[in-house]
Image 1 (cartoon, rainbow, N blue to C red):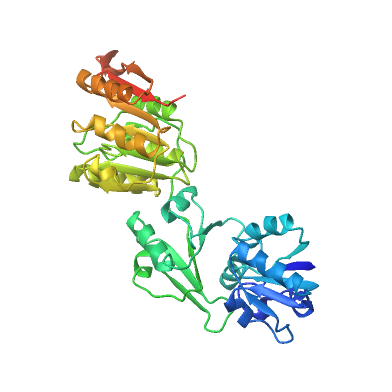
Image 2: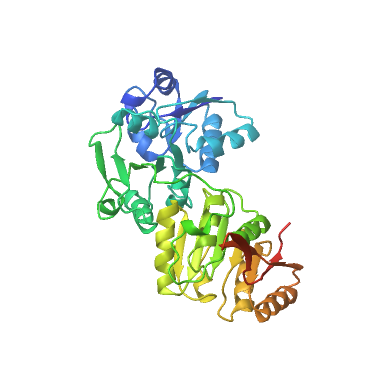
Length: 402
């Protein structure tokens, strides 16, 4: 039995390629979602099996082969190479020794771009349909982002996450029922989109979020909004980042975030990943929001509260910076290591008591920690001379950091 994986396109029969249409009418058995089977063009076989999960589709094809089918088709929405069930089905068919051919189609991203009269080669393509998705983190690359949506994560859900990340005025476009009767294109903002209702067959395009040029570790202190909240200085941030070695796409925590200076550095390094700034001081939280907008760190999420309680429902971290503990060092490190025993952790200690607490907490959990003290002096011009003024020494205590 020969099987064709047939992309139905984003719409109905109008978006079928000629190759796909010929395969449909030539098949003597068709398998796919009920919605797609109901939308088949005239002339297709009445021998049909409704199935969507890869294993169920494979089993339906095996049954069709046993019933004498020679040419079967699996109908799939959109394009077979764009978040399609084809990816999970092909290995199963190969293992079952069922020859398969893939017939691509017109995707919703192509249709929306065509409706807008725009190219889409510079868009980031993301699925928020039945998978974990952090919309704000996806915008960290500074490009327009196209979201496939569905289920509980529709356009309004995506828009709410963008609004809450500090982008209420970001322009978004929603395409509903593209290529089908009732097609509608809505241009709005993230904040206004939250209160709107959309069809279950919808996609959303978020325009590129404002983002300044990316800086390396050690952003100049004077670029941050500071107020009267203590801030981790440039040299210490650079040293901490060199130990944490954050990679794009990783999840990071900044516990006791203060002004958010370390949070910003983490967000710039983890572009495409998510950073959680945990802070209980209201004035500091306001500064974190200001700095998030100033640096375009849209993948930075603020969690207002006191650790460790505020850490309870955060995602498991790859890297953790601890700038303040309010005496909860042991519980904070325990919370991080419980979620990820291999998390890279760097603690900033000013007082010797903080250093001792960090070393003891790591040792109690079998973590080999290294302490490095940083003493920084900065020049100040006085009467034509330059005097070196020493800042308070800082000790960084790192574990799981190569």
